[in-house]
Structures are given as structure tokens and as C-alpha cells.
Image (cartoon, rainbow, N blue to C red; front, side, top):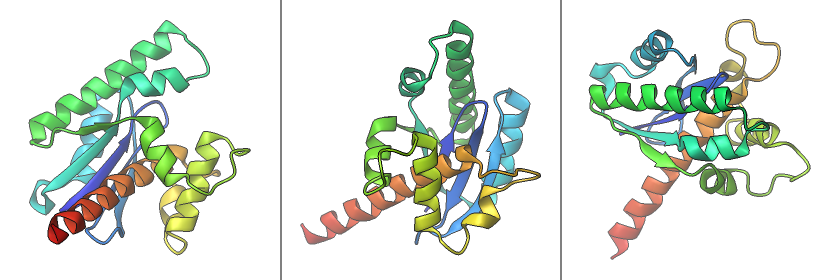
Length: 172
């Protein structure tokens, strides 16, 4: 089963990993419904499923925001709701993950002096040293795309958890 990670928001990203953790596809994902549907259709073709999807809980993202602006809060909630609805229509309801949970696992060993987004980019470069540049600079980006980095790490967090769970079940 392929694993999908989605980082929603203005600079969001979507990533699909194979069963061994190899990167299949990455893409930016917008906040409006047409761009969300286009991103999901492009990265999650129906004939290539099934998929297991991991999405950050929107309430956690809001807590980490630098501002408590109600407009930003509403946009994040609406974007996450649109993604959840589209995934449910595709038959893949997402598993919601606390941002602090997946980041604690995926940022382990990285210096806390780096910002949250910078740690994610560094973690992707360490996890996928050969492929990361091909996926982190979509279009005309001059800097690594932090939304895609976080989507990759969220997918890897879900995939690794599934692998560990299956190993535990095998032993019992």
C-alpha cells in the first residue's frame, strides 16, 4: 500500500511513498478546492491505489502559527476540511496526526536551534539524500519547498509506523 502525506495550508504539499519508503511523487497543493482536487488527482491516480493518507490535524497547525489572526485560522480550517472531504469522496479518509507527534519522531537528532520548517527540510535531505533535490524545488522555487518536506516526513512517519506495527503483529 502506498502512503500519502499532506501538509495543508498556503505553502502546502503532498507526497506519495512506495512500500519501501521511496518517493513516487510530490506536488504543491493549494488552499482552494480546484487546486486541491487537481493535486489529489495528479498525485493519487485511482488505478495506482490503494493509499493510506496522513494529514496534520488543523487545530495543531493553528497553535503553531505565529499569529492568532482569525482570517488565517479560518483559511487553515477550510483548507483542511476541503482536503478531508475530497479524500473521503475518493474513498481514502485521512488519518489525522498531531504535528508534535510526527515532528518528534521525524526531527529526532536535529538541532533545536533550527526552525521547525528548516528541521523538516534537513530531515528530508538526510532521509532521501539522492532524490531530495528533484522533489524539493518544484517549478521555479529557489528555496526548498517546506510544504513538500513536511508532506514527505508525514508520509514516512505513517509508513514507518505501519511497518513497525506489522513487525509487532508478526512476532505475537
